[in-house]
Amino acid sequence: MTVITTKDGAEIYFKDWGPKDAQPIMFHHGWPLSADDWDAQMLYFLQHGYRVVAHDRRGHGRSSQIDTGHDMDHYAADASAVAEHLDLRNAVHIGHSTGGGEVARYVARFGQPQGRVAKAVLVSAVPPLMVKTADNPGGTDISVFDGFRSALAANRAAFFLDVASGPFYGFNRPGAQVSDAVVRNWWRQGMMGSALAHHAGIKAFSETDQTEDLKAISVPTLVLQGDDDQIVPYADASLLQVKLLQNGTLKIYPGFPHGMLTTHAAVLNPDLLAFVRG
Image (tube, rainbow, N blue to C red; front, side, top):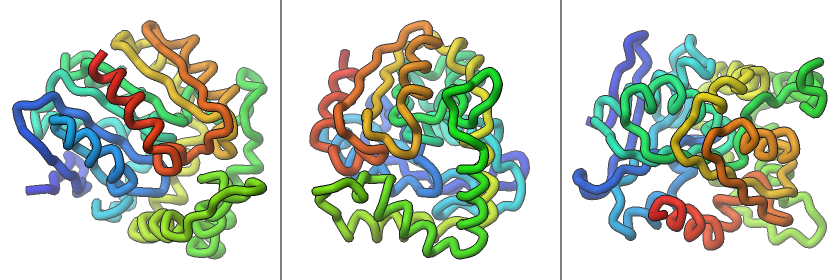
């Protein structure tokens, strides 16, 4: 079966490819996407002999459109349910954007205590906290996220096109090589999911303080981000993450966008492989 049911009734879809006795790599996708966003990485690592696993977050992709639990605690618990169901051990967990927050909470609260995690990777990830507060003056003003919510509620299909064709992949930059196929695939994944889950997910990825999660992570953790990330400003994300982690390594890619795992997979994939093997 490629679906598990959580304790609160959410049906979580997952992919599990490759030799079951190989080291597992579990991928955690960003908002508002699905496990399909990891196609380039899953095929790459599968070809290098790894077991690759990815799931659709609750309310996203092929998972059920449950109306509750759209918060980082449930995201991490759902990921843990998949890892426990498949009995993943010595695993490397790689998360992009919101999925990076999911990885941080999963590793801190489930993966390390259960002894299941070998390493972690945070790519263009949202921790420690996106929204601007008195304690996080470099964050993004709440009005930006309110704007996301308003645009999603007014016309989700148009909003998703705007995000994918604009800042997510840096396609709004002068001279950018725009891929209509990439835009369509982003939109396809987003529209598969639940408007409710996506609306609630904005609060989850922007207002969840994960400072303590990062401090609790002791396994080797690779932090990757582009310095032209228009979605998650790197100065308030990766630069802070590596300071909070006990065993973190930082790599900044000049000019790379938020969605660099897609636009620059040929660069990112070998770097990920080197870390996994190292």
